Image (cartoon, rainbow, N blue to C red; front, side):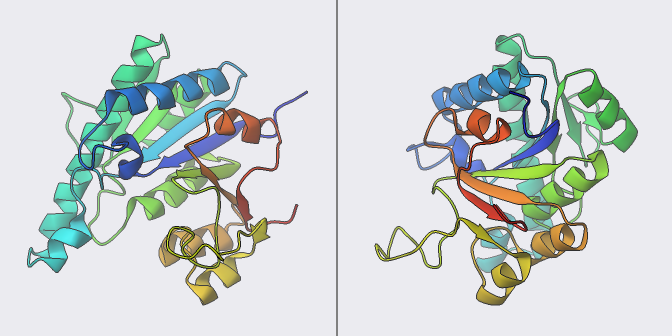
Length: 239
């Protein structure tokens, strides 16, 4: 059976990399993610990745504690570079060719972000990891994911999280929370559902880019989604 998508953007939170450690990068978790990416890439799928930095430093949290917001956000962007390099290392240990492209120039560590070069890497079946968000303070890695997905012509954003979709309330604190099978962008914005921030959702809505929110805890979900299985919550479309 032909895969449902040819080119996807995988959005991972920084917290996804720390497992149960509470802080930092868990090599076992990163290795497991790399295994899933390798398996999907072997199907011929072109994969780009955006990773957050919340496992190391979150700019908005630093700002809330008195740091100047722009400085705190730049620190958060550097945290995403650490995560990108960790994932690159895990992928390359599995013989997967990768490129890290950073929105903040650091030539010794990563390529500068150049859209055409990123697309060419994808065409050559390299996994492209986008680091440092958009390179601008006040924008989250959710917005970076939406922006990069549209720039490279991805067909969908796959957002891997700790829960198995989008709920009408926090399923951790409310056992009565109901999971959506699909939901439209306006409902996400109107109800403040925890999918991505409002800027990212608006970008996706304006460009009709669907988002699938799914759980990272169950191995194989990434592959099942690209093969067309109905997993998680589809934002911006009907099933």
